[in-house]
Length: 125
Image 1 (tube, rainbow, N blue to C red):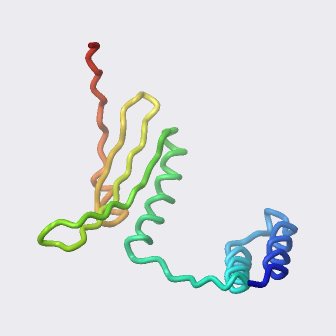
Image 2: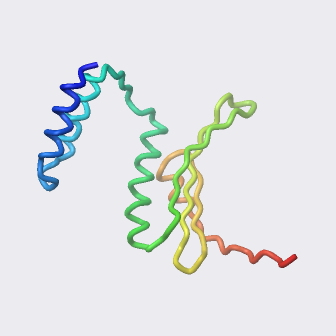
């Protein structure tokens, strides 16, 4: 592991003014740091790419709707007959206390399934 190169890349990136840090510059720095750290990288799977896409959409939607507790999860389950079932799930809390939920295999499918749910009041014991 080349600690000097890692430090140099981190310092160089931090010295770059924030408004000049393009995705390409950041990607290049990360690639050089990974090489110096002798890390192996692998591309995201199609499902992980959909999860990242959904997270980006939800971040924008959260600003527009002023929601809180925004979550995107990738759920894996081993059920018969499918050896592995993958599903994306989103949940967002609206300012009025209601929730938005959605399920799907892609970001688009999950957004199309999105629906508002009104929470029920718990009964006092």
